[in-house]
Image (cartoon, rainbow, N blue to C red; front, side, top):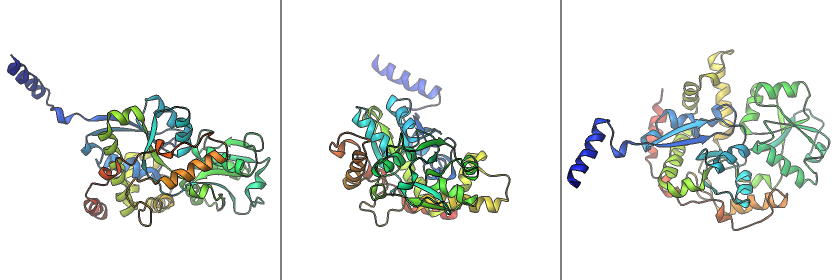
Length: 353
């Protein structure tokens, strides 16, 4: 009877055109901008369109979202398995008991600054008292870091400045042109979009923000425990997409446009659109490179980075405790993440048309 049952089971699988190994793990993955930008190609459209996730057995749904804090809350709830977000939401979440963890260090340098237009009378952070700062949204990671910077300057960011959500691209450009804001708190490629529109900026950061960890894959802890292989494969897909993008940025732009046609400008010549898109992408590319890193593996964290990041957010009052930083992250997947044929990715990127 057992033999019959076993053969009956496999016969059913054949009738349905499937096998146990063919099932794909479904993943919901949140970006932290409201519409997928070309600067996010390395960790969204490139691994999806080139099949890097699919060939590893993952069915990844990439979903835009508005801000790191909100996206991390969705991951905490279990409604998404991963987000690509900045660390402050992870720090706060962990200290409030949330089961989340950083599993892949994607952008290896800080991305957030406060900036003013080149001819602004504002010369330093302290000059921002009683001013209005434009942000993507109040839940953006850039907003959280900017508030921390102001706390570090001795100000109460909830009382001493005003915060105005101004969106991205044309919306933020209009807010600047209309003098609705005195400064903006954004990130590298958001500034690059505005530079394409003719703006020039002066940027403010602090010694603390210059050492902060940046964008990372934050995973739902229950999913990580139950599916470590899927977590590793998801991160490896991003590593492959990153290497491809570093090798051929123009190809990454075209792949992103193919996946998200609405992201391709139609009101300017294509060569200009491509040039401006590569400028946006280049604002982030150098921060992906492995050369010169303390740990030159795709996705690797170091304890020193986490110590500096935790100390900064503790010193400015965002978090109230400084536990062992090992609870925030794991490098346990990183060796396997880096076990892929880099030469094959580079060759494909170089010949991609």
